[in-house]
Image 1: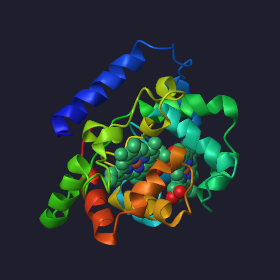
Image 2: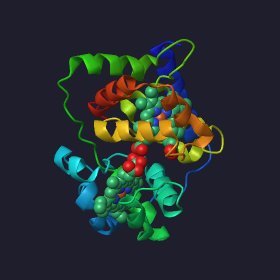
Image 3: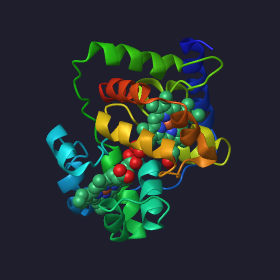
Image 4: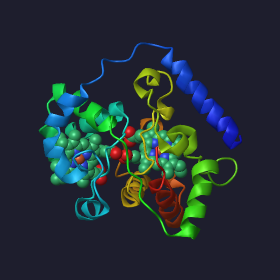
Length: 223
Ligand code: HEC
Ligand code: HEC
């Protein structure tokens, strides 16, 4: 499959799902802005925490994240399916009715990508993002599920019942350190929140250099 085919497939899947079942009622972004005051200290008030803040607390950017993925992640932390000593207690404090509003707020913000100076890592990471590595598909191309520029699958909730493997979060512009940490967590099995083991399988076949390269490239993508 060429990149063009993948892009067409991604666009078609998105269009098909738009015309499908009606989505869940969306949260209220303005209400979510008020309710997210406690999150800003680590994630940034608009979901774009600066690199220095990331270095201190290791919290990901939430700006432009797929709202359904934010809600899913809060459930994963709250229910103990995903564990992090800093974030797990934070999730306990978020009430069910507030989750959709907070997710709508961060989801409506625009992510600010990070710059990169490392040309060699960038080139290797770009290849993995668009083409994967090995034949046939030892490491699947990230774009196939995470979409052009790593925007994530915004129609997640609608296609969820059909194809769990394409229900992918936004990753473009995310801190490279966070992407690498999560790939390592999937690889070791510490993080097991992925439907059908999709990310555990892919990350499990990546070596240290693949992980650092693709994380570096993805962190520079604007979406
Ligand atoms: C004290 C710092 C801190 C605060 C405050 C905080 N978080 Fe987090 N959050 C983190 C860290 C650290 C992680 C990364 C956890 C990991 O590596 O698994 C995280 C991860 C997340 C994720 C997962 C994102 C992804 O891409 O998988 C979501 C969603 C999230 N936080 C939402 C919130 C919300 C909503 C609030 C406010 C109610 C909040 N956080 C408050 C530190 C914080
Ligand atoms: C077959 C579909 C598919 C492919 C291909 C894929 N992913 Fe994913 N990815 C997912 C899904 C689904 C999730 C959400 C899993 C979960 O909820 O834990 C995810 C989650 C992630 C996360 C966690 C994001 C966060 O905010 O916590 C990262 C990082 C990631 N993928 C990176 C990659 C990279 C890098 C590649 C290419 C080497 C890739 N993915 C290829 C489907 C895919």
